[in-house]
Structures are given as C-alpha cells and as structure tokens.
Length: 620
Image (cartoon, rainbow, N blue to C red; front, side, top):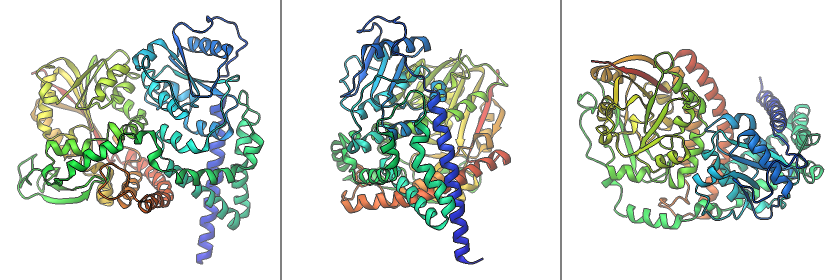
C-alpha cells in the first residue's frame, strides 16, 4: 500500500468520524433543547406582583425582564421545587445557544448533585434561602455576563438538586460582545486557548476532508455549516436573533472568534485579580530556594524498614509548574513507593497552595464535579454489607463525594474532615452536616467511637504517616464499623508505560503509594477483616493517557503568567504555550479514545489505575 493510499484512508476515516460526531452532537442538542421548559407569561397569576416575597431576580447589565416573565418564572420554580432558576432568553444568539446546549443537559443536571452549574448568563431567579446561604444579601450586583455565569456555578452548589432552567420568551438581552468571549469561557471554568485551538483544528480538518475526500468532506462541512438552523430553526421556544445570517457566516465567524480569543491575554480574566500580590509573595518565598522544603533523604522503607530502596522516577512539578524536582523510590522488599526525600510541612504548604483553593479552585472544582458516577460507585460498595448511619469522610476537600453519596444513602448523616477551608464551605452548602478542619490523628480522640463508617478516598497517599491515619480510623470507628479506602494502584502497568507522565504519581503531592496487599496486611494487624477489594471497578477514567497528554503539554510550556513562574511572561512565551496547546488538541482526541479502550480493559481484567478496599472493624 502506497503512502498516498494510506493517507487517503486516514482522511476518509477522519471525515467519517467528523460526520458521526457532528450528527451525534446535532441530535444531542435537539434533545436537550426539547427538555427545556418554556415559560408562559400569559398563564394564571398565582404569585404576587414584584417585589416577590421569597424570591430575588438577579440580572446582568442591559437585561430586562417584564413583570409577567418574573411571575411566570416564580410559578415555575415553586411548581418544580426549585431554589434557583436560570432564565434563557428566547432571542439568545445562535452560537451562544448551541454553546450552552453543549454544556448543559437539563434533565441530567437537575438530578446530578455534583454537576457544575451552567446557564445563559443573563438572569437568575433565586429563593430567599439559597440567596442567604450563598451570602448574596450583601454581595455586589453582577457587572457582566461573566459575573452571572460564575454566580450560577456557585448557586448550583447551594441548590445541588434544586436548580433548573427555562426559556423566557420576553426576556430582552443586549447583543453578545465578542471581546468578552474569553472571559465568559473562563467564568464557565473552560480554557479559552485550548477550546479555540480545538476549533481551529476542527475547521482545518473540514477543509482537508473537503479537498481530499469530497463526498465525506462535503457531508461534514454541510452538517457543520447548517447546524444552527437544524437545531434551532423549527424549535419550540427559542427564536435566535439573526439565525439565517449566523448560519450563513458560521465558518468565518468561528475562525475569527477563535483567533480573537487566542489573542486575548490571560491577564484580562477576572480570576487574575490579585495575581501581582501572589507573585510578590511567591517571589519572596522562592528567594531562599526550594532545598529548605525537603527533609533529609531516608535510607530505608517507611512501610517495612527494609534498606536501600531503588529510584522509581524523578520529575519536576508537572501539575502547576512550580520550581523543584521530586524523587519517588520503591522498596525492593514490599513494593511500597514513597517520596524520598519527602517534603517538609512548609514544603507541602507551598506546593498545595493555589491548587485546590485560590487560583486553582475553579479548575479543581470542575474536575471533582464530573465524577458523580465514581462517587456513587464508592457509596454502593457498602450495600451488601451494611446500612451506614453516621459517615465521616476524611480528606473530603469540598465534600463532592458526600454530596453525591446522599443519593445512595439519603438517611445517612455525612460529616467531613479536611485541612482546607473548603470543608466549612461544604457545610454551608449543606453537602455535609458537620465540618472538621485539621489533621485526622489530632482529632481522633475527640471523635472516638462516633462513626459506623469512615472513608478515605485518594487521601492516604497524601499523608506523611499512613499508619497514624489508620490508627486514627481505629479510634473513630465504633466496633463493627466499616472503613472504605480508595488509592492509586502503584502496580498499574500504565505507571511503567507512561513514566513521569502517569497522572496518579501526582508529584509533589503524593507522599506514599502502597500496593493493595500492603494495606490489607496493615489493616488486618489493626483488627480489621477485609470484606472486598476492587481493582477494575475503581479505575479512574481518563486518568492515564489524557492525563499524560495534559502533563506533557504543561511540562513543555508551563504557564508563564503563573505567579510562581521564575521566567518573564513575554509574548513569545505566551505564544509558545498557545502553540503547544494547539498541537496537543489531536493528542487529546487520541488519548480520549485510548482511555476509553483502557477503561474497558480495566473492567474486564480487574486491573486499573486504582483500587478500592472495604474492611470491617471487629468487635473484639
């Protein structure tokens, strides 16, 4: 087979894949649009005239809602049991409507307690209770669409199963501002540069297919070109302004919009406020170097004390790009893998900063909010063995697991423990009943015997002394109580295949990675009976190849605008980062496919990148 023939086959497959993806996306958008209710402002007036007792209308600048629309929205919210209602203008432009339908599945997101809040960014109707708990009584009004987009993400967290969406026919909105598009993407928790690079790559693929495979290419191009009219034309409710014009000029608008977004500097983003203050603090802290963040290297294994561990890998910080290099060593006797030299407490504070909270808070929340299936699977693991009544989730972070687990165990009391401030925010949201902030071993005596279930999900590997954490669990659990632990599996084949780019190494945060047999032995020695161990079922989808591409791209071109960056944020470095992210787009697509196959294999062979263990504390 000649090279030209092989190239033609690849192009044909790519064109067929494009047609399939565009067709599926069009059908999905139509289905989601049909799931959006349309308000009827002419309906019966069962709610008093504004100001509405118990409700707050929050709008972006330039948005106007008439009295009938507000009354209809309030009636709908009361009838559906909602605390937050996002009003979608019927005259919203076509691309904004299609963009919203790509992110929002109204039926699924209403019941998915962890799904991130998405909306049109124009008007919100909020109940008194949610308004008060979210601290909006004294908050400044939104200054832009981006502010309202951030607000709906926040409010969804305070009304996780009581947030809804409806099309408002009489809601009037200003035309979209293309100059604010990048800011609005960031407000949704999306990376503007990567999305714009993906759009440009997609348009280039359509052109290539059109030239090389005219039949398939023409089908894909027509489907892309006509998608706004196909989705929105005969729809009930939306009447996008300028639909015909938007459809006719779609490819040109997509290209110019993507180029404009790529050219928008990250410093324009609202979350960049305060970066200079952070930069000054990081610069002062790094002036003394990073050596002081590490303890002396230990000569033996912290798990079994065997001497002379072997180096498994050395890596820089590929997660945030902070200065420093880290070494993982493996015990030749028991297989325990540990950071050596390990970070001091000051080092841990430095490398955790702005990851789960601060600058990295939105990104972490977005990732954690997309794991509802994993959270429910963890909670379901107890079903054959017990009915939990009082559950303590250790290392709960913002308590996404507890929030989702309530759908499995609605009558269970869920409490959370973590080092970060986010645990108190989780309590205010109602995701947990009681928040404990601090080190688990330090709080164990205070909580002794209070819980019949304790969980540690991807927590134990972050701790300095795993044995102390297990001893704390023994104290806190009542006799007959259950301990649920999930960890990365250091025996995963992907770890050897991908080397430093295997995401579960997670340096510099992970201090210990222990094989399941080591953990089982440690629990048995503490009076536990092992009830179940899951490997394939605990596999983290997209944690191998997709994570590797992200780490590699970040390692090749770290963010020069990060406040801890030690190199100047020149236009050339920003351009280099954008170029690397653009070139990574096809790699991300391939990685998604590989991870899908990897997940199927992990489930079939019971060998993934993580394992889950359930043990019972015996009565003696």
